[in-house]
Amino acid sequence: MDRKCLPALLMASLLVFSSGLALSASSRSAAGDPIDITSEILESWDGQNVIEQTERLCMISASYNAYRVSGSEGANEAADLIRDQFQDYGLQVYEESFDLPVWNLLSPPALFYDIDGNISTTEDTLEVESFNADAYSKPTPVDGAFYELVTLPLPQISFSSAVGGRPIDRDTWDSINTTGNVILMGREVRWSPNWEQVFKEKLESEPPVAIIFFYWYSWMSYSEEYSQASTGGRPLGSVGPVFWDQNIAVGWLNYTQGHMLKELVQNNSELRVSIEIRSQITEGQHRNIIADIPSSSGSSQYVILGAHYDTAMCEGYIDNSASVATLLEIGRMVQQAMDSGKFELQYGLRIIAFAGEELGLAGSINYVNAHRDEMADVVSVLIVDCIGSQILQVTDPDPSEDFDLNSLADIAAQQLNISYVVEDNVGSDHSSFLYPDGTAETYNWYWQEDLDLHDVQGVVSSMLFCSYPITIYESSTGSISGHIHTPSDSISGVQDTDWINEDQLQDQAELVALTTLYAIDIGSGDQDWGWIYLMPILMVAIIVGGYIIFRQVRRPRP
Image (tube, rainbow, N blue to C red; front, side, top):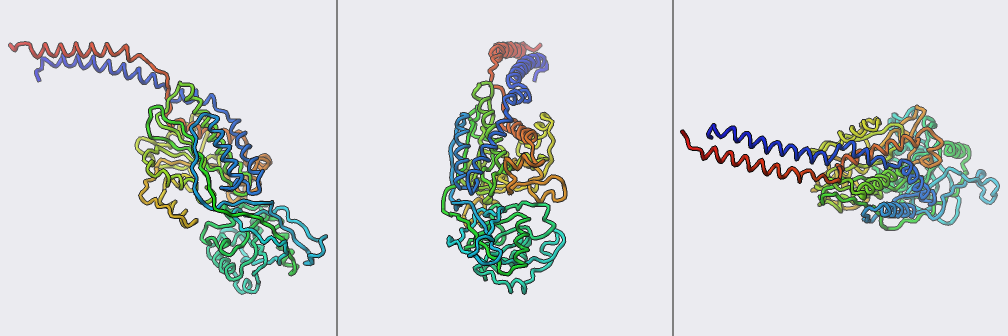
């Protein structure tokens, strides 16, 4: 290149570069500071709506004998509420369903015991008030008969870590006839694979009419309430569906009444009980409710925000009404911002209320199966499950390309002055997106389904928001423990304990909301037309620069 051309080229480049900078600065000004934008949106955040929606869902649970067990009448009423609320907020709503067994209870379960063994004398027949059915229990016979109550003793141990360390006394068990009787059984038998296998063999050889679980050991006395398994009437663990295979009904008692009956059995070989579980099991549909807010650019990429709405046999205030209420409020807030015309979304927001999390992540894995071809368009997944307890927890997802949920959660926490801890040993619906193949294999084993997701790539940027403590097992010696899957996971239960308070629930819900806003990359929708005035300057710069270069090139050499 002719050195004499260099000054002209530099001048032209400078003009073009300056104009580009001005244009870029104008564009950035239009987008605005994301913190300012999200703060403006959060001004419409209504934490009280989270509380009110949580209570509405709990009241639906309390209206049904089966609460909101997935697919039940209560679950369907909750699904209708969620769908209608999203529609009222202006979101695009539709449903997807999948087939699994559906369980309902036709009347409240009941358990009576007769002290003298003579069922013709009714004055000594008493009800056991804490008795309830396990979800997915088979029905009991409808003959109203009384059955002998027997116990299968567990080995003497002094603490929970010793469970399974000593063998079951098979000789004693063999001496106890369980065929056609009712077994009062220590729940801890299912905490050891070896004990559970011996128990399974006993059930298969001498099937009882029913099993009533309670906590056998005195070191469980700190928990008056019984913590239910997700589908205790049809175990999803290694024991398999033995209760269904043998047509055995399953229920549970609290600690005090369980030990009361245990003592009566030990002192009275003729103790008899009447048990009634009028369950109904049919094949039916479980409904995922999906609500969309499309991106402003028309992009097919989207962020998933999800929570399950099914419960165990309780109201499910923390597990998982509060999380679903958080989704509803986020949907309302973001849609309101979009309707104002002042904001834009880089990515679409898809909010999903999943069915069947308690059935082995059934709703989320069936969603992945139905949308397997879209997984590449999912930018990130945020799942909310059991927020509201003392300590907020988040999982630690791997950052995807140019997308780091961890950093977004950090920024949101700093903005709101809320702390959280990272905990990865937590299972919930995010696992269906992180590990679709492994989750599908487990689900297939649980329910004899055939979802083949070997070729589906997971979404590495998938995060779970949860809290601690949530179960009775997480703080056995402290002053505060969790209560999910117990009767205390309810409106009255959370009001009577230090486990939950409304302020911490609203704070945690707001952190989920702010992280979601960052994830969908919300920006200002106000148009800045400054670029129109810069275009003539840019064009003049190009013309002048080109003319100078042309003159330099055409000038005769000396």
